[in-house]
Image 1 (cartoon, one colour):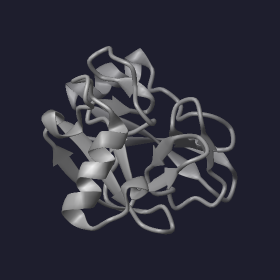
Image 2: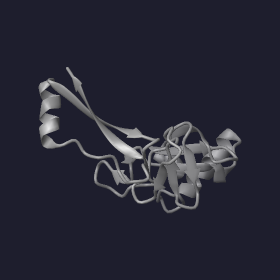
Image 3: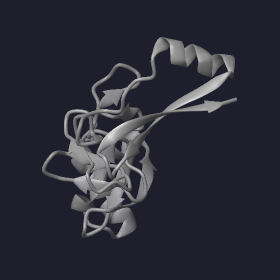
Image 4: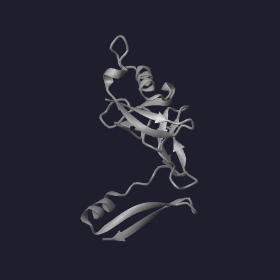
Amino acid sequence: MAHFAKISENNKVLTVHVLDNLNMQNVNGVEDETVGQKYLEQHSNWPAEMWIQTSYNTFNSIHKLGGTPLRGNYAAIGYDWDETNQIFWPPKPSYPSWVKNILTATWESPIGPDPTITAEQQSQNTAATHFWKYSWNENDQTWNLTNYLA
């Protein structure tokens, strides 16, 4: 099955449709996105160029089955289509300072990716004695580590 995002004139994902792969094969029997787009236009009365193929298995520019990632992220309602970078972007977090990381198709703090919980902290999380979590402090532009007792 192939998945296609229906996008609006302002590049917002309106919905995602599943299309049988047979409906996107060209005359040589090869899957072709443009054939799928034309099929969807004919059956939905929505312009072909506003149907963009997306991969159910792609998240943060990684294909979870080891294949080739397609367009950064699997599209979802409310995502933005970035035609220039060929990426479906989730909504921006509520932090004005966060920026797009084109390589990972993620939003990041201005000082880089989220910090990682240490092995010791993770073992405490697993033991349910503590719960360690990093949260972004927009005012200070820093990550704060919080320890919640279980």
